[in-house]
Length: 223
Ligand code: HEM
Image (cartoon, rainbow, N blue to C red):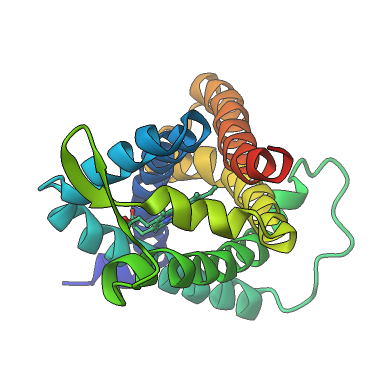
């Protein structure tokens, strides 16, 4: 039996499915983080709800595998494409409607990966792995939980840290503006009727992610 996941189309399919899963995760993650704009109690409760939700035991490893598969297959496909077409495509054929984002998906994904490593080291690793003693407990509505708000607030008071987050949000938004509809195209929703709609939804979705994740560091910078 020929292994579908070793075939180019199988790899693209896996990249799309994991990409769609990450797209969903980002919406949930943004929603939780927007609670930062409503004060410490609201955010700590939202973060606590997510951290203690039994589903998290399944979601966390799935998320890690999703990121890894997406990155590994993106690398394999990019190398394959470069091998098949070694000349740089500086001279694009007239009428080629590809966007800058679509031609630079690997670069954009790589910048998001760098951002993600910085981000996880600063928050996830500190909270979940190192159990950093600077993270205190607070009691909200009679329940004891981590004071994640103070950790995030302290970080976002540093201007260059905010800059990293805003740049991360912009690169992520550009990556998604192409990745969103491209993933649907790969899984088979590719007739011209749906493509038009999906490209519009992709722009709206990537704007929500880009603006949403930028508003948070900007808020802490200004207030
Ligand atoms: C303003 C922007 C952001 C804030 C304030 C923020 C905050 C956080 C915090 C506090 C955690 C740790 C949660 C915990 O373990 O209890 C976390 C985890 C995580 N963040 Fe973010 N995040 C932001 C943007 C992003 C972006 C843009 C991405 C993806 C590119 C991302 C991906 C992740 C992942 C994969 C985790 C680990 C899984 C999880 O704990 O949910 N975050 N984030």
